[in-house]
Structure formats: C-alpha cells, structure tokens
Length: 88
Image 1 (cartoon, rainbow, N blue to C red):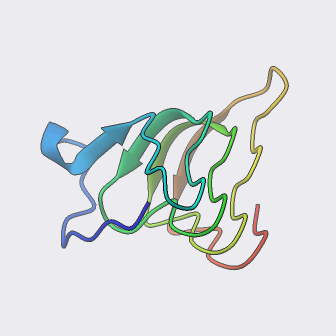
Image 2: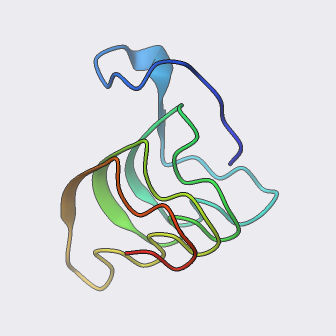
C-alpha cells in the first residue's frame, strides 16, 4: 500500500482506508482496522493479518506490524511507531 497524504488525522473519512489490500506487495492482506493515508502500512507484507484499531504514521517497512494482534488479540492505536523492517 503506497499512500501519500499530508494529513494524519483520523477524523476525516477520506484520510482512512478500512481493510484495504493494495494487491501489489501483500500490504494489509487480512488486515482488520483503519489505516491513515499518510504512508502507514507501507512495505512488503506490512500490516498483513494484523488486528489494529487504527494506524497513523506507522508500520512502515518490510513486514512491519505483520500479524500484530493476530490469533484473537487486538491492538488499539499505533501512532508514530513501528517504522523499520519487522518492527512491532
């Protein structure tokens, strides 16, 4: 999911993807939650099979946030975090 936007607000619905699969690099496949259109969940398999309420300016890099909250768990909000390969 390669997304760019200057806004990181979760208040405007046009700044959020909900469970989006970009089809290109497996980012967000099986993802449950909201992703801000600020470059979050960007990278090969980033946010794949994760259960995160909202992701803002986070989960950037190969496998970042992959399976976070997986297997019955859940994570509230990830903000300004998890910005390297396999982070979180």
